[in-house]
Image 1 (cartoon, rainbow, N blue to C red):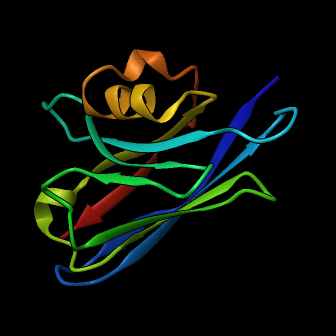
Image 2 (spheres, rainbow, N blue to C red; image 1 turned 45 degrees about the horizontal axis):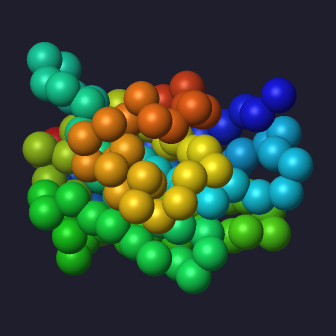
Length: 129
């Protein structure tokens, strides 16, 4: 039974930084696609970043490019999401998601088809004021 447990998040002033972590357990081996999404009140869920375990390829939404960094510890099946220069528009509930997908499908899932990812964390609130 695969579970994703997120940690981090909280409240920060604009310009500040936060780190989110997501630990995946229950996999036999390691997951290949780890992604982060966010959903603000009244808005649709948005794919923010993704990383492919084999080779470390990454994807970032234009809205966070240059400010957010995603990384993956394959040994521990843990993804870290460093968020810098935070803005009020970054306020949302952040979710991690994972699955064993190839990179092309991982990109597609993050960009527009989150339903392709089978496993999701419980979400963690990030508030920027």
